[in-house]
Image (cartoon, rainbow, N blue to C red; front, side, top):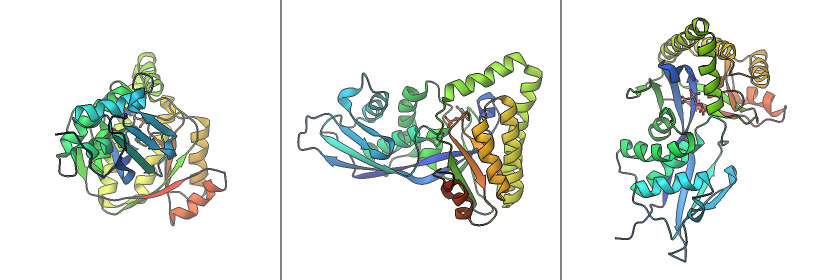
Length: 308
Ligand code: PMV
């Protein structure tokens, strides 16, 4: 039978609530899925032998699988489709999303998860989708921890410890967040390398910082389960301070967090690798009011409600 695609598929984006970087060193992290963040739609090309084309205008992506040797996203997508025994020709895939790419919100895992679903269909086991996504994630990131694919496929809120199955968490109440993209590009591998360097140079200081980030993740999890958003916010601010001490924040991220707090946020921190990318702020009141503060600075914040 000629391989085919399903008409629609979607995947979550991810936001790390607590525990980034420390998770690389064995500590727990808490991450949340942003549902339906990427929507893909497949249509047949008139020419069944033409290479599959993928167009996601919001991410400036327009590539075909003829470009796998020069275009890493094409290669990752081609590898995912091949892994799932999907069609490499005769289809066009269009994507829509409100999530910024390459800013720590899991855009690469979202595309690989949604693609796997386009091939495998809605009824397939989530583990198979994650396995296929990881094939593409290895092209993007070398040795990914797996947290992005897990969250992109499963959604909800997950406690994640490297090498262990993720634990779904049920929040005591929904958590409103304002996600603020700084507009500064960052490189996850370089940011992770900074922490390795700090560990080598100042192990007796750096190790406790990582352990305390892990403790904060566990305490933050307890507050989320209890539904105490204010205490979660306090812990988020503490985590940001420790991430700064590790050297993975930046003046821009520190300023965005300070702006959020000075406008009444219950807490704010960088999310993901840091150095650029996004911060998350916990609003005390309507998220849109806090978001307006950032819009007035020319930024494009996203208001989300994390629930599970
Ligand atoms: O690529 P980002 O910004 O989502 O950051 C990934 C989170 C890290 O903990 C820094 C790295 C990892 O593999 O978990």
